Length: 201
Image (cartoon, rainbow, N blue to C red; front, side):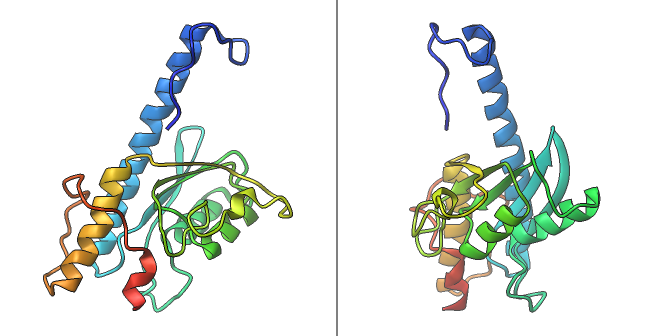
């Protein structure tokens, strides 16, 4: 996550004190919306889905939200990000969402990255990395691919431990044959996500 500016820096015409305040506010907003996404992911887990949640926000307003549901909907495209984008586009009456931020608990896959680009999302914030299918640097970095015609800014690691614990706890419970916990975030521990594709293996 971004750190505070040094005292000597002027950002966008603001004094360093105002710049630091703006950075702190942005961080607080990022954590607020990521917690919202974590709650959506917990709901997905309670339905036996891999716990991933996403929200689309613009100018502090929630435009759309979604939780992972490919199993319950029999829809391979029903990832949290896609469902949140669909809801946001419907709410504003436009499939383009410039200036919006998408928050998601797990690093987007290739399908979701493509949808994010088509929607012209301005910023993507994710919680924890997906070492098997992540396309924001883990397996490939589609958001940095110069040949593509739209590039969202990307920030990872917001509430990383909570996001990682949630998805790791889900898969640990499945491997042990225990009921999947429906708690929102877990205890902050865990060793990182196994990846959303593990549900299919």
